[in-house]
Length: 215
Image (cartoon, rainbow, N blue to C red; front, side, top):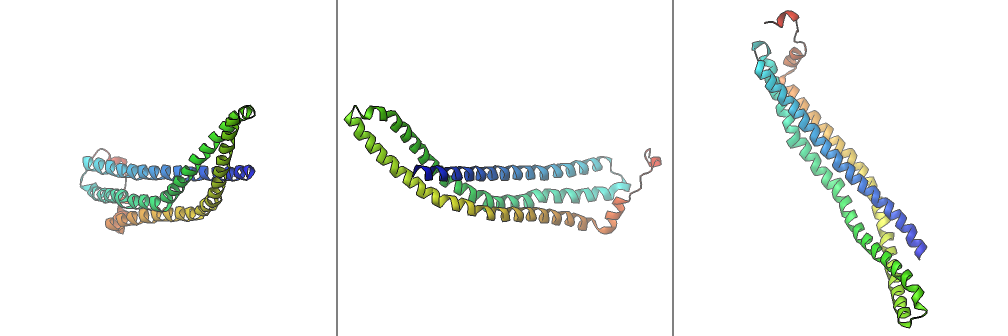
């Protein structure tokens, strides 16, 4: 029974570490995504303010376009990121955290079992000389066997459940990325549409002449 427990424990511990790592990477990715959207919004806002500070008739169109871009960058934070965060929470983080919560109970019971082992090893030398210790040791061994059996039953059900969680997480990651990219592209396209193709080409092809620098 002990050898089976040790084998299951090794598999269980490995899978728990994998789930903890995936959770940590998901949280880190979402934090980085939020910072990226905030950074682009800050960039667009600074550009808008900078153009406004030097705005003349020749670049009035650029000022209007920068306002559109800033508006859509702000929308990415309130729309795209908020939606992605909700999806990540529902489809990735919550299932993992639910499984890790179950694992926490099993880990607590494993710690109890470990303390039993230590106590049994400590009392064993005294058992031959002290009958009362021998009886206590027998009772403790019975408790230890029951705890080990219960943990084996738990691990037998936990291990496949944890493993079966992983394919869905892969699919959720793909859907998360697709949602982020599609929504971001939609907001970028909104900005281009609001600016208009002719005006956008005008912005791209605005002539820059050294002679204009002093005017």
